[in-house]
Amino acid sequence: MALDQLAVELRQGAPGGALMAYHLAQIMLLQVLRLWLASERPAGWLGALADPRLTRALGALHAEPARRWSLAELAGRAGMSRTTFADRFRAVVGQPPLAYLAGWRMQLAADRLRRSNEGVADIAYAVGYESETAFRTAFRRRMRCTPMQYRRRMAALLLHRTLR
Image (cartoon, rainbow, N blue to C red):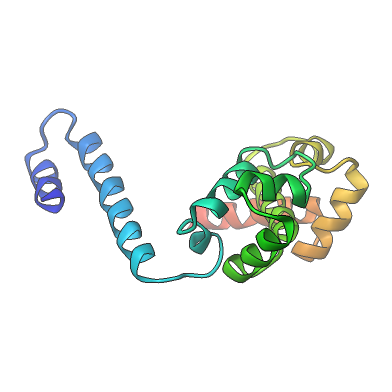
């Protein structure tokens, strides 16, 4: 039914049709994800979405990535003991909760380096690092380059794509 309505919206070109098509496409994506999650047990954060308790902890991490999270706080959000939470999170997501948080922070930082002109120190503090030095060290370890090298590479890549 949603697919039929999407085709109608795209074909007719009625006022608001593009917006309607966009939202119908989002709804269809969510339906596909629900069906897939119900039938599969995917690894990673997507797999955690099938577990309401892990979803609460992930939601908290994603909502406040700069917060100094402890395993006990995250386990409390999930309504589990620390050991049970840590074991379940690792089994489903494939890494410990605080390692996941570190990776999420790096993704956020990389996105900000690509999309903004914010200073490295500002980005470091915004994603939860207490010092620019600690952030630079962690970024280099994870991304295999400094934050400024990353920013320059991404800018050059964007320029190259634009010029094609």
